[in-house]
Every structure is written in C-alpha cells, then in structure tokens.
Image (cartoon, rainbow, N blue to C red; front, side, top):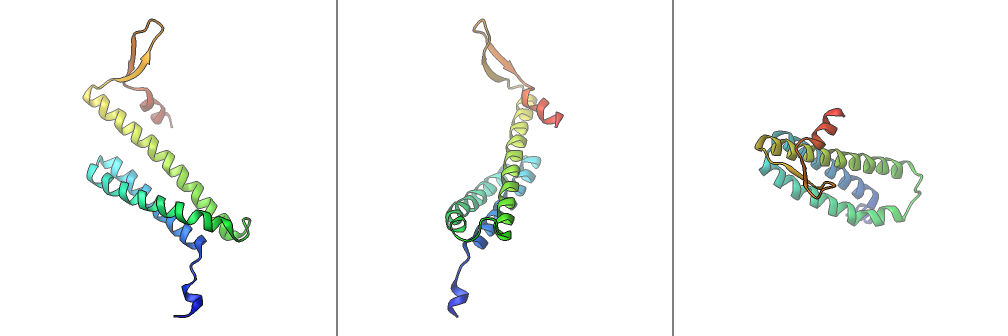
Length: 132
C-alpha cells in the first residue's frame, strides 16, 4: 500500500458522516410515520454514531483548505440540509406524540392561567403541523 493511499481526507470523512446522519434521519421519519418503536431504538443508535463521527471529523475538515472551495461548499450545504431534516423530524415526532395523547385522552399541561388554574390543551402543536 502506498503512502498516498493511506492519506485520509477529513472533508471526505465528514461528508460520509453527514450522509450517514441524513440516512438515519430519513429512517427515523419512516419509523415515526409507522409508529415503530423498535426501529426508532435502532435509528437512535445510528444517529448517535453518525453525529459522533460528524463531531470528530468537523474540526479537521474545517481547519484546512479553502473554505470557499467547491467541496467545502457542498459539504456545508449537506450539513444545512441535515439540520433542516432534524428540525422536521422533531416537529413530526412532537405531532406524533400529541396525536397519541389525543387518542388516549391525555391532556397537555401548559402551566397556569391568570387565576392560577391549570391550563391544558390537546391540539396545540397538531394545529401548527396541519397548517404547514
């Protein structure tokens, strides 16, 4: 094996880790849509591994090279897409939990109103998600 073959490009490693995280987030959306708890547990492990890899390679990948280079910009765009996917997954998961609570008759505790009475609802976030 030559010395050139042993060199690992941290930007390529980062791009691979970001792609694994994107795939894990897509699997998470599918699992939430099917309410598959077992699959969610597996995906949680995949997400943690991919996020740890992103955290490990990010400093080295961003330290060298031209930050305005094409490859850097591609990886930065992939990271932005993953962040958007993560936010969408959080909203989907919150809506799924709220839907389950609504079916089971569990009321969401919002705190207290002006007269120190408990304020509760069952449809807050669900309305927001259906409006989107």
